[in-house]
Length: 127
Image 1 (cartoon, rainbow, N blue to C red):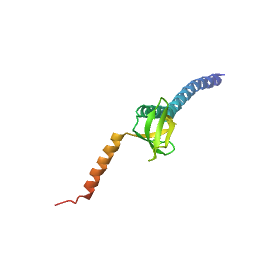
Image 2 (spheres, one colour):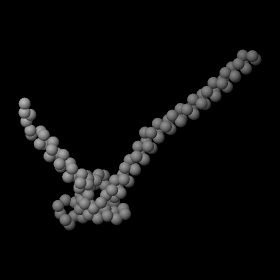
Image 3 (cartoon, rainbow, N blue to C red):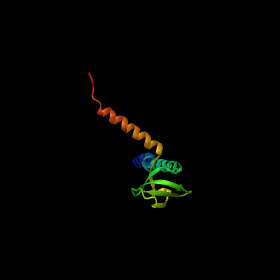
Image 4 (cartoon, rainbow, N blue to C red):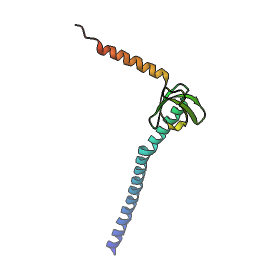
C-alpha cells in the first residue's frame, strides 16, 4: 500500500506540470499564429486604406489586373479611370481594384533621378 501512495502522488505532481506545459504550448502556438497571419494582414489592410485615401484625379494607377490608367474622377467607392491615349476609354471601377498609385510629382522625381544616373554613367573618369 505504501508504494501505491507514492506512485499516485508522483502522478499527481507530474499531471500538474503536464497541464502547465500544455497551456504554455497552446499559448506559444497562438502567438505564432498572431505574428505570422493576423498582424501582417492588419498592416496590409492599413496600407491599402492609406493608398485608397491618397488617390486624387491625375494620378496614374495600375489595376489588380495589370492595366495602367489615369484617374479622372472619383466618388466614395468608385473611380473613373482613363486607359491609354484614347480619350473615349473611360471606365468606372471600384477603388479596391487599384493595386498601385503613382503621383505625378513622383514620376517627375524618378525621371530626374534616372537622367542624373545616366549622365554619371556616360562620363569618363579623368586622372
